[in-house]
Image (tube, rainbow, N blue to C red; front, side, top):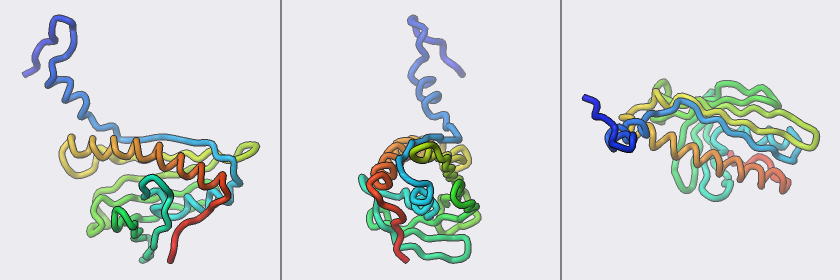
Length: 171
């Protein structure tokens, strides 16, 4: 049953909550980085380079075929499936929702590098939020966290790469 709007024409709180819980499927963000494409590629072709808090962190990687377990000192292990590596312009990884289920739900994280005079535009597209396990509230929380996370990760990548940094992984 749908309630009528209030006198000002605003939806009642239950309707507002429902609208806020609609889960978009895709995040798209980009940043321009004043660094050579090879240096940017060295970073973004590493599975899980973007699992950080406040600073880019070296991760220990364990590879098993196309699966990579990324050991983050703060968040613990994450598992990624490498879907495509097309040096130096495109990398795609599946970020597995459940590390114990490599065939289960995941988001697809795609990086596209487009050189321009003086640097590279790094574009990230993460899709698949609508198919993640859990209810709409949980999926929306993951989506919102990743929107904020990509803003931070792209800024950190820009700072790191423009300062001369490159790949971060160990192992």
